[in-house]
Image (cartoon, rainbow, N blue to C red; front, side):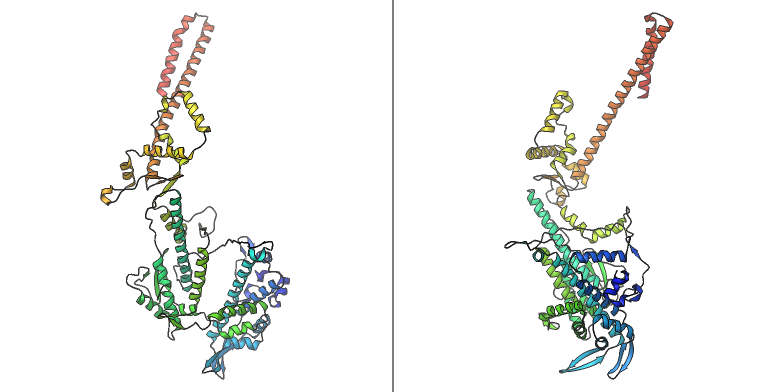
Length: 608
């Protein structure tokens, strides 16, 4: 978006952006896509500026933010070539013009940047030495520097947004000791399982989803308990798939986190040894870890709640270490870019209390401040905060991959529902009594099936009075409950065996346990056992068929009578007309009239 902004805005941010586009920076690159969801990058840039202005990022702060992002872009344009140095084979920066631009935007001398990226400091017995690094190592340092700036900018922006929406920091009209509440929005990654290859990032994402799924299952179980208690119903034993074994495999004692942390500390640690130790330390009864015949030496599989996932452990150690060289941190702290200096200075201040814990041994295993361990600390804090709140869950399902309206890809949709844990939640909530209906709905659906009162023998006046009283009487929950229970008792009377056969359930003597009743009355809702509501629905549809037959007979009868009356009236009219024309006596028209009426009657009978 910044690269698509007007030239005068780019010139105000940094002169190095003038006449540049996506192709000018290697981290962005050329793209054929110019419009996304009906908007160009330039249009979205205006929206971004408006959003940043809304939370208070404007003027100098906005300029510092954009210049910090330019540092990330410019770092990607730095390239290296091999070079011989007095200390041995090393490398140097091959693009001097790009180095000059980076020096300008970072506010650092070119020599300092070159030393930071192409050399490393080694301390041996109290003496410091400067060692050259290879081209590959220099590229890793460059990318690590850019990633560190970008990630810290993201954290700074999130903190700024939270501060802008914090009531305690923005509500000046508070009097006395005010108690503040908050509404938090947690946008999480979905469960990830790629057909090609699943790496360290997918394992971290799925680890977070396992923790959140555990919280989700507990919340659903508690909500089911509360609902049944509120309705005065004894809760049966509710079973659900517990994913605690997967969490123990990942973060338990000598789990994946501990093994990977230990392997990162060992001098000869590698990804293959990490996978070998996983299977060695897992017991034979560990059902959450699996292996297949065609797995390579650096591959392992985990049975997550959403399904099996095969992981490739390539670069697990390097990604887990993700150590930012001290020379890079010192370089960033020397930067004249205000935001870059600020975000690294605050980061160093936070890390000082934990310094020195990188390679300690405790309780029989190594503990290290790695990417995964930091991720778990943040995850623990998140779960602790979620535990203090009333959580509400919103599941977003994408109906098709093409984002087309009115089309649903069922396999893709069902896969998302399964991965979101919705199937488990529904199974848990519906395990004891799958269906439930309020009293009024049951009376509305099934009251016509009550044959205990022969309403056909009622007089029309009594029917009208009953309907009038039923319409205008005050609704009473207790009487409604009594009527509903009486109706259901009548409908299921002497039919328990029928509905059990209908649902495919065997006799209780075969399973050795007491059968559950077809329904249970709550305070405002009726809970039905599996198949009971379907049994009633089949009976209701059957009664509709019988009623439809009666209605059809009545309609046909009325139509026949109406047609007969019309034909008889027409016959009488014809007789009168003939009598006038022939001037005969009335008795001479009787026989033709009777003949016509009999003929009409026979036609009606033949038709209906």
